[in-house]
Image (cartoon, rainbow, N blue to C red):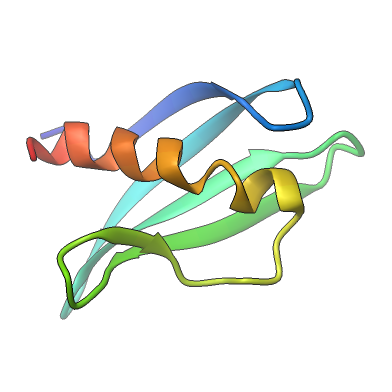
Length: 83
């Protein structure tokens, strides 16, 4: 499986943004997700699997458009993981 990939997602603010995913293997498997905002600032989050086996963002203090993209981000990871 390719551990790094990118996906373009239309966010709730109507803008298409390219999110970059990097799979990290440690005790648990998780993905760092990064994207550049309108001010060219890099914003990062972490997707980790919860107790129910669903991918979820760990951070809650992200821009609203990033948080609301969570379902699409999780779907991208699930597809890459073959689930």
